[in-house]
Length: 254
Ligand code: ADP
Ligand code: MG
Image (cartoon, rainbow, N blue to C red; front, side):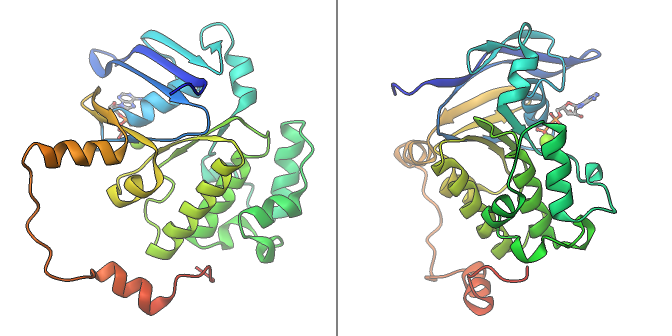
C-alpha cells in the first residue's frame, strides 16, 4: 500500500497504577481508510483511542498523527482530528442548529449548520433539542459535531452500540459518506457484521495486545484455510433479515 500513513503507533503502553492496560501495541492507519479496533470489553480499545486523541497520557511508546508527534505537537493534532463528545456536553436548552453554531464558534471555524445537519439527515430536527432525539439521531448528531473543524481523521468509539438494526445501517451509510469525502475513520465496535461490512482493515486487541491485523476478508480466508468450518446454515435468511424486511430499510423516524 503506498497510501500515506495518517496514524503511526509504535510500542504504545499504558499502565493504570500497576495494571498494564496496553502492552506495547504497534499499528499504522492509512489515509482514507475505515480502520476498526475490535476486542472484548476491557481490551484497551478506548484507552488506545484516547491516547491518540491526545486526551489521555501514554506510559510509553510513540504516536504520530499526520506527521505530528503526540509528545511535541498535541495542539496541532487536536486541530486535525474529530472526536465524539460525551452527550453531556450538549447544552440542554439549545436546539441542533444552535449547538452547531456554538461549536462552530468554539472551534473558530465557520460552518453552514443547515448543510451539516443535512449531511447527517437531521434537517427536519434542526429546531429540536438533543434530548428529544432518538438513539440513532443522537449518534448522527454527535458524528456531525466531529466534522465541524473539517478534520482529516475522525474517531468513533462504539457509535452503534444500542442502536436498532435500521439506525445501525443508517450510520454505516453516514460513515461511508464521510470516508468518501476523504476523511479517515477509526471506529470501535462489538458487532462483527458491522466490522466486516464497514472496515478496510481491523486490529483485534485482547488484553492489551494486538493479536491480529488485516482486512476482514483476509482474516476470514485464513481461518477457513486453517480448516475451520462453520456448522452449515440451513436457512437463506436470519431474524435480522426478517426484521429489516418487515420494518423497511429506508431512513425513517428512528
Ligand atoms: P475497552 O475500551 O477495550 O473496553 P478500556 O481501554 O476502556 O477497554 O480499558 C482497558 C482496561 O483498563 C480495563 O481493564 C479498564 O478497567 C482499565 N481502565 C480504563 N480506564 C481506567 C482508569 N482511568 N483507571 C484505571 N483503570 C482503567
Ligand atoms: Mg471502550
